[in-house]
Image (cartoon, rainbow, N blue to C red; front, side, top):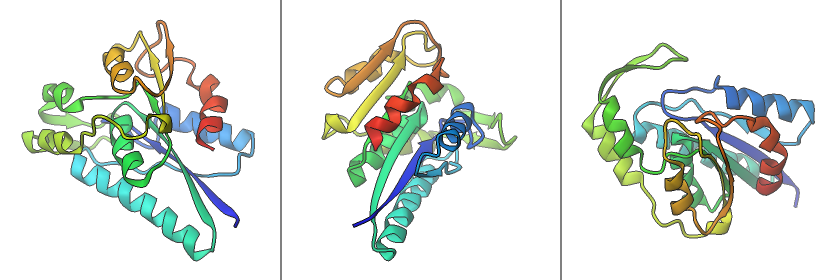
Length: 200
């Protein structure tokens, strides 16, 4: 049976499909003619809506492949909050996920964002509420069921998140931990060959 390959990039909180890493991935796939459909869903600030968008997108890929008589092969890359959402999707559909400086417990960190915020990419203003925090808590999966399905990429210089939380949660998974760096993950493009080899 032939296969249909799909690669999802799951962006972080207050980000968008126009993020730097999404652009780096798109450029790499084009430059090397990598045979995969690349998808970057635009996710709402609202966790419930964001996970519904992702869930529907994955289901659509599976349905489209089945209609063609092909086997769907789906890989996930999740950055920051995208790693948190990606874990939920990976567990539901038994998919491989590469986590890039992931948010492990965003319901704690994002309490600092309660109230009016503005998306730096889209300009959208929104009100982040306690109800949104509770939605995040309901999406938390700990521990993960199949550690070998995950690859953790973290940099100790992450100025937003504590990298040690990811190291602990995904302790039985393959990990690449680098000194220094930043939350954006410096030199991310150099990791793409290994990321794609892991996913596909």
